[in-house]
Amino acid sequence: MAAVFLPGNLRDEATCSVCLEFFKDPVSIECGHNFCRGCIVKSWKDLEMDFPCPQCREVFSQKNFRPNRQLANMAEIIRLKVLCVHPLLGEDVGMEMELRKVIFF
Ligand SMILES: [Zn+2]
Ligand SMILES: [Zn+2]
Image (cartoon, rainbow, N blue to C red; front, side, top):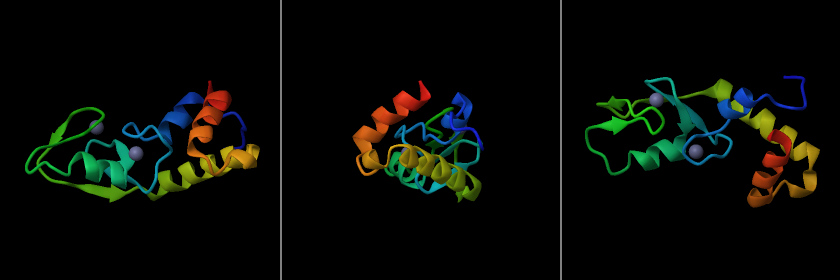
């Protein structure tokens, strides 16, 4: 966690595959994939019985997810680190995306 430059896999682990943002209130579902609570709730909103994982498409019969506190902390740390590097860009999400490209790619 001490490195300023985050390895790609760490970035991926802190990024929701639905909204491509850092996790907000991350939850784990049964296949082990993680999403923002809002993203998984939204993607399952109109479904009644089969609930596919947005990432691996494994289908579940129930809306089961649990908060992933460890991931929430990690996403927060990474977000803070990004904002610390460029505090002037902190509030602007669009700029934050650009900034992330600069830092990570
Ligand atoms: Zn998301
Ligand atoms: Zn999955």
